[in-house]
Image (cartoon, rainbow over all chains, first blue to last red; front, top):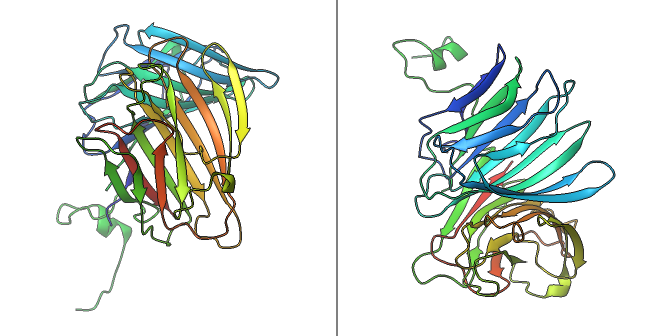
Length: 161
Length: 198
């Protein structure tokens, strides 16, 4: 049986980088999953995600966060990118899993489910929206600072029957 | 002709050999079982039946919107999930923890509303959920479910990040799953995919 859950592309940084892009994403899958394990040498920073190079105010997010003592929620509209996580630590990597369901359909806006955590600071569950019906063919991950050497970024495709 | 040598390199490299294996994929670990995509005219429910009993757990991934006009354009519409034709609400339990932008919430109820969240009609964003059903073939334990749901409508008051859990108080192996919106019907292009994981 053909593989259902396949790696598409992966990179591990060997030097500090401000952004990476997965381009020419095959349109043959049903969902795609982006796995990010990033780290910054200076501590807190934002990890941002854009689709198809869109830097317009076409993104929004609603998050649920726990910091060890308090549960809270936040919501932002008309953003220029999806913000995965603003927690940060110079000591710990920050894993995030970004699920993009039906990324290749050209009918609906794209809803994204993400989880992003920093061991010393908190856990986040996010509902995000890209208000564009285009199929996603590229994903750019940006840092508000820089991603340090050793940060990893992997893209997987999931194909339904 | 007898096989005298078998090496990984012979499967993956070499100009004379087609690449047979990428040294990574393990076909059979995560498999697509079935997909339901709602057509024109909509659907009142989604049904996965005759589910193979050969996996360890199941995963459902969906993107959906309903015709529910209450608070039209905003917010979520919860989904009921029923196993093996059992639509008795008291045989289920569900818990959830929500972030909805302006606050957090949590609740528990004796209901089958463990099956994620669609969005309401004309919402800019479609509801998306990833649901895991653990040990679905085990006949010695009740069935437990974990879910993550996301609804976002570019509105500060009506988005939703939800983590949920569910319980079906039956030791029967799960052979069918029916998903029904709490209100309204499923709109065209709503898609539901069922996967099996070993």
